[in-house]
Length: 428
Image 1 (cartoon, rainbow, N blue to C red):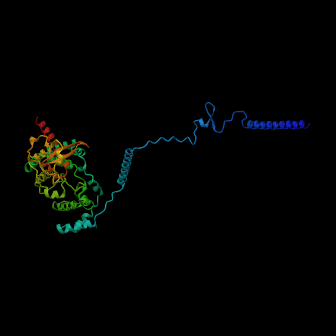
Image 2: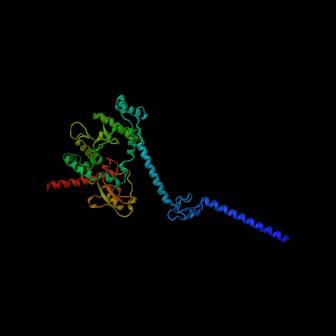
Image 3: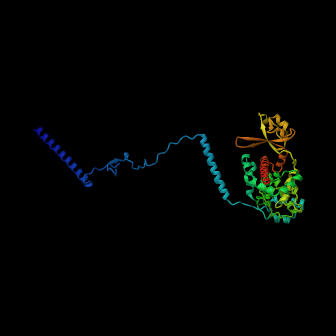
């Protein structure tokens, strides 16, 4: 009896649990139908529906943007070698330098007056005491000028510092050669007269004027007093030389009755067609047309005569060789003694021969001729060797540079060849 009662109770409890379970299931279906009445399958929260196929695709396999995966993949950095790092550093430093130069060029050039400075007062005191200048006039003259910082930059960037393969391109162009031939033709009689008196060939005088001012076309447009004052007081490396030149300039202007405030020339203080420095103007300029004046600015006769006179004074020898290419054998030439004075001929051709250095055509030159040994860069690796005689050294007295003297010589040769060719055509 008791067993029957127990089984009945258990049966009723099971039925009751079953009914509760059914009830709960029914409520779940009702809520799902209220949200999705068409009985469509609800995609999971981490999925999307493809617009074309209308297929539910989980986001983990889709192409939809994900915040974590939307960033572009970082490319793998290759290890940079020390060489590539150095190159990049150089490149960046060059860029920074260019930017710095551009910024500095945009800045206004600061120009200051020298009135009241100790350096100018000392200079004026010497001029008044030694050369009897008027203090009042000198102060008035120097009050009209100011410093020129750009001149200092130009002095540190002179063409003579370039290697030969760059330097020669400046002075051996077609225009300079053609204009030289024209200059020679226009002034042939004056050049012949100068050669007869001083022994300097027309092509050399013509080449000097061509290298210096392109035959008078570029005489310079900087106030000479400003350039000399700037270099005297703001260029310590050569201030003593330029103070001396400034004194010569004032003395020259007084003697030639010229206004020093109006005279214009190069940034280094050179003036006229032959670009004489003031000391050279005073010492070597001549009145070749006998008009009572030494005019190197406008008189071609005075210019040609003065250049020839300058060369004659510094030891030009009529008919003597200037320079010749050298042929070298062996390495003995590296042990040659150096000259006591730079550029001056110090060994004879016979002595050079003992070191394996000879002219290309030895028979043209006497073994007793003295010469200097010249090295010229044709490229970064290639070199050319020459032997410069006494007349070559004379050209370097005009400008103390082998590059300058070589440019004058080669330009003179090209002008001479073209001049002769043109005169032959006329005769024919």
